[in-house]
Length: 268
Image (tube, rainbow, N blue to C red):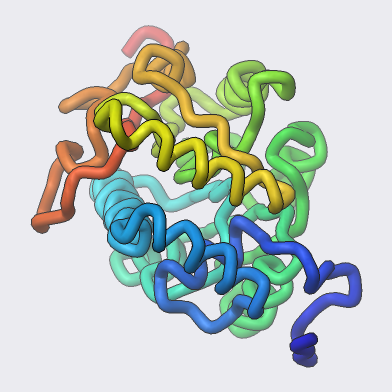
């Protein structure tokens, strides 16, 4: 079994990780044989998975740039994953060197590598926590971010790993209520809508692979994804297919919805 000095002792190298599979799709190197095997099984069913991961990363880039252009300089990135080229802090700090970012992920490899990568960056920090542990995450965030000013909450390709039984909508609402007025939510979420009928069986096979990880897939329809923006004013073009949100490239369509919304400022 593979080992490396940066791998925390708690990591189960015999079980694939959704975060490390995503790293593989993006061409990263912080994944193991068990992750590559699972990811390649997905790709045999859906050859476009790597392209879908890159398209999702492209949305993250577009959303962060959109927010920076509107004066946002604080980011809380939940389910941030393993750092690859084009991280939030790289995008934000290129435009504003004083921008601050807190990365949060439950995957120990993601946090260990993030911590090493950010060692010389005082404006970016990573902590290991589960986004469902809202109080714990907010406590960590208050040590890094200024809750008297707007914060951008990023939930990119993470809520589809939270089952309905864990009430992801309530978690999002608790973050919304804790954020100061004028804060933002940027979100992307996988969906079965738009998948051809003959592709549903393939999707079920992919979901079966992810059930081997600690992050089984919970794909949702547009209506449920849009509901995560309750209490936010969604900006144009709304909660739309990923490839339709302020595109600046020719990303192919993937079965995911995305959106960006702002928490209203009373009296504004």
